[in-house]
Length: 120
Length: 113
Image 1 (tube, rainbow over the protein chains, first blue to last red):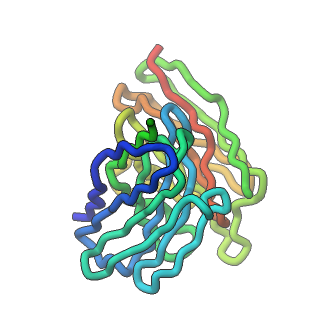
Image 2 (image 1 turned 180 degrees about the horizontal axis):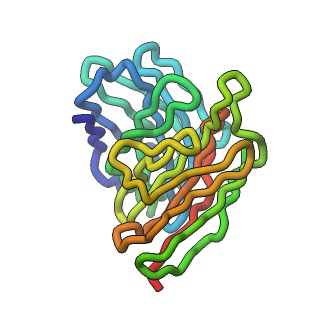
């Protein structure tokens, strides 16, 4: 069965960087694009961007262009997201979500989420 | 960016009631090439990731009970739950899948009366 297993909760200091992971199993990793979504406590969902694991091509929400860096390792079927220059505004749950390769594909599987807390 | 506006922000209901919630997009989500609406609905329960309920505005994801119905086209969409069950208490989000950046509504929270 399809599973997206995300790395554990992170506690980071303001100004630092953090890299979280999303390990995929149960399907061909390179056949789907991996997306990342942010959810602040009690808030809605924000799309950060996606990576095509097959080619490494990425596309970002302009709002996160200087904040997030998406990468993927085909050999381990793992997607990564690095967040830089952390502030309290980055404290949130971050989800990876699988989606097909075109518009109208939708997020059919989600990871359990990684909670990031930014605090001095 | 396409702005997704959901209403109401919360709904207080009793088990067995019929519920309707709305989602409006600032631009049409209809793909003129294939006449499909690129709109999805997700259900999120506390402490869980969102779950895909409806895609293409009206197609139920596999395993989703038939009490959930999506309808609408263009810029106006509706999610209806014909008879609310206790396990349906959650936040419901609509999502634009028509163009990047992908965007979500702010959600409608379904609460027990």
